[in-house]
Amino acid sequence: MRYTSADAFQRLYRKLPAGRQESVTKALLLLERMLQEDRPMPSLGLRELRRGLWEVRAGLLDRLVFSMSRDEVRLLAVGTHDELRRSL
Image (cartoon, rainbow, N blue to C red; front, side, top):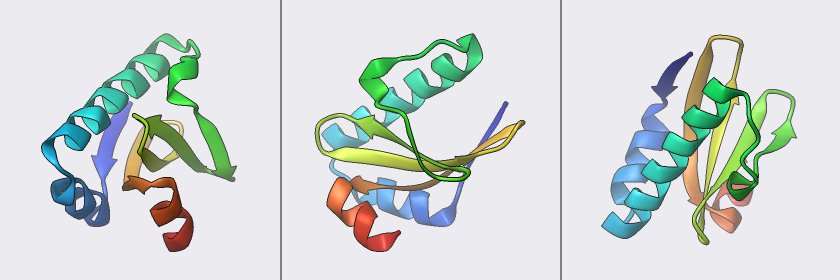
């Protein structure tokens, strides 16, 4: 599986404080592991927002939004639940 990120994701990630960036990085590693092992990880709170658009938790504040196809996970946005709801 290939992982890519949209420019918007990179921009939003860079704006996060270091501690929140660390939480996002840990969530990404867990997501990768979950997909490789095909094993649920309830702590991520994976849910489908709409067809092909997914969200996982990255700590108490942040959520990651991504699209997923058979061979690619594309990171689209990161932010609080409210920020992402407004932008989507």
